[in-house]
Image (cartoon, rainbow, N blue to C red; front, side):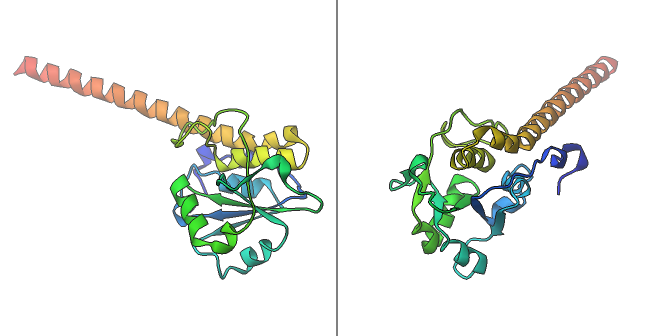
Length: 202
């Protein structure tokens, strides 16, 4: 779904999990080329990606919220990640989009908002340098999942492999931006040189 030159598929590693992951993506985020929910879906066979705003009639979502489900959302009532009851496998519901879009999904879906909320504290600032985050503690969806699943599954190192395609995508975009900027500067200098020569000939 991306140009071959910036494709990250070769860096995807599939990871089996006992945790079920349900990604709810805002429609505006679906076509964002540098979004990360698709990386998560490709990395996690035990995951579902649903796109929409109102999921009240979505059968997949309706079933998932009955299966020991938690919503990954830093609300005032959210419990710490380490307090999650794992006596049986859980379903982790994750809203994907900008923070404004994520809050909209939360407000528009009472059955999702009614789930127990879970939060976590990132170990490091986000590497999502190609999109602006609203605060230092905000991270990309794929970064949040790598951290949370690493904790829930008791193997943080294994889930760091989820971030390899993400880091490659970020590097490619930054490289492209630098190349484009260099090209623009060279073109501007060439235009200026031609203008000066034209003035001298006049």
